[in-house]
Image (tube, rainbow, N blue to C red; front, side, top):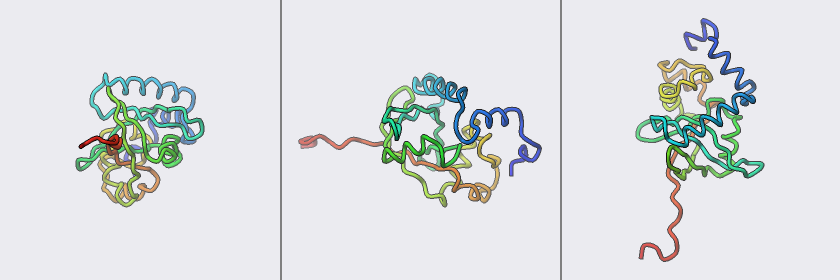
Length: 174
């Protein structure tokens, strides 16, 4: 349990939870997310861990853009659903077969493969170390022992990012 959670929620925690009541962004949160998605995609802010995920919506097929923070761990890159399993972007990634685009100044076609819950704890801890916004939604202190992260790992999907290179056109490589 987080030390600050024992003392009660801060104003920032209450505000963040109000923005995402029920695990869904309200109107203000959607506007903030659109603004950050634009900024992250442009690549004007550093570090490059701040990206925009672009994935087709599972119902409309219209491309949805969402700002996220990339966590690096043991030479790999990961995306974490700080709002949990019932997050729209998680459902959209599943519906798209894991194919998406990340933007940070340039577009990168990627494949997002969900990490087994038993392997998530160290990635979740790293995510909290690099994503201040995630700290208000994941109820574990960033320096907590891995055992505390293991207890909540099934609730927070984690996706490994790998480049999704298109197949070579016929006749290429001869």
